[in-house]
Length: 113
Length: 113
Image 1: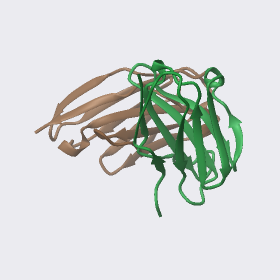
Image 2: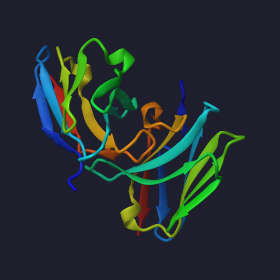
Image 3: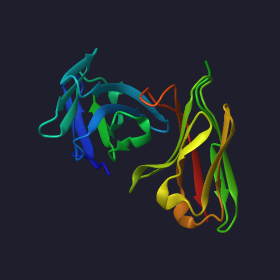
Image 4: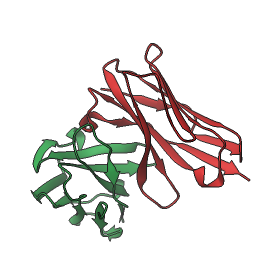
């Protein structure tokens, strides 16, 4: 089955800097790549996703890049703010269905003011 | 609209007990998922329902874990008998369709003594 690896288990940046979280996947059939955020003591909520028909997507300060050849995707958070501090989970799904969604183990981002 | 509601928030059980966790999905959502979250394994899919039909029963979790969806607005996850290794956060999520955004509940933190 699909395996998703999140390369950074922790990441610390200064407020205003950019943060980059990298993930790799193994299944070439994966076509849907969502990102979820989990703030301390809370559950996961969706932040942004990308599908395999594009290689870049932006939503305000969040940018997702997808490199299908390298089977790699990344989340870029620009102009970081303290409220960006959370655990970020990447995920990948062969065929684009939530039923086959495999999550990475999470990256704990700390934004220091 | 209310989000995904999970009860109880916390559960403490003795080894060997039976526990039942409850979930109410977002109204109108057709897909419901149960996940287990631990620091070591991350998020693992336990069960997946589409329009109340069980589509995925989580393979390795079959023997002591049973999820049911008696109607479109309520699901339960029964663990019988519980073991200390079942201590984790159990998350319920729902989505409108197979390739739509997942909405997570706040989770139930289970401690098995």
